[in-house]
Length: 79
Image 1 (cartoon, rainbow, N blue to C red):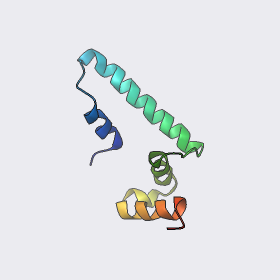
Image 2: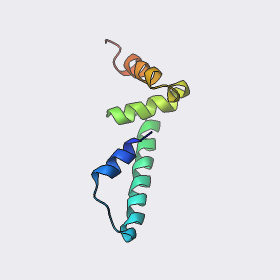
Image 3: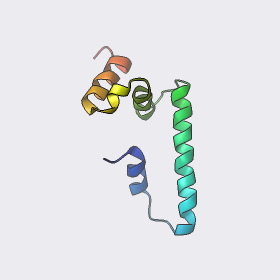
């Protein structure tokens, strides 16, 4: 199963091995920023909201359907 980071990597052209370290560092930085936003409940994007739900509701990690229903329940209750 691909993650959001896998799709982001596919969009970028292949880089030399010397730049691979910086790409890994950039990925780690993005992960840390996402974790920081989730912990401070700054969920402005869909990606941040999904990460927050996955963090707060562990049962959503096993099922895309449960995750989707919980997303609607929490962030779009008028649907």
